[in-house]
Length: 285
Image 1: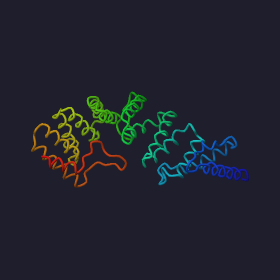
Image 2 (image 1 turned 180 degrees about the vertical axis):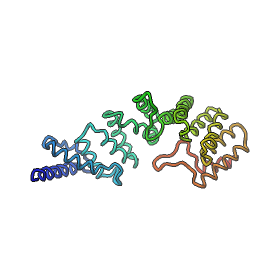
Image 3 (image 1 turned 60 degrees about the vertical axis):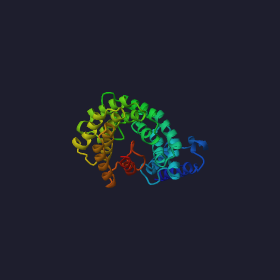
Image 4 (image 1 turned 90 degrees about the horizontal axis):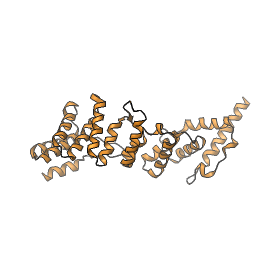
């Protein structure tokens, strides 16, 4: 019992020393802490304690307390990419990309399979680094060549298609989005068709674009998809069918006013259709 108490007190003391070694301007690495003075048991106690405090979904993500805990964990377990990943999440959410980015780059070096399901997704939607996102999506997909992969619950073919679309490589984007349609079948996300339709629209393949938007509105039973209505209106406008175009712009406007808009609290949807945009389009007609 006395031995256990000694270990517990030693662990807590060591934990305190490690955490308080960090301040606003320094990290444990910069302090050059010597961990050799701690026994394996003491390190285990420290790790257990800090892992219980680890801010996976805590209210203090990205804060000073969280950073101190995670910096100490990274010092104790430099080959555990999860600590780098966890620290990066909070900073990505609050826009501290200059902190989050190096952490994720280091995590990829440490353990690619454990980070590639997330990092390229972040590069696509948050950093808008489409070239790097595509590179890492391909690496992620190559890890399991005989199965369909999902990054953050999204089909990797869809995500690769989005990166290609943002790079202006519409033909390749259409091919990748078509793979997503085939692999997901009746469970396909409606926005796979919406974005493939936008790619067709950019290629002036108006009938193919309208077919994709119709598929969303009819076959996928998503009649309140304001983006599908808006871009269907764009396709008809480019075809010279003004009345049909106006009908779909008005429908998009009505749906947006009722709140039928896809949004995310951290990033703006690609090709986002706002109420002001629809209003300007209708006034131009």
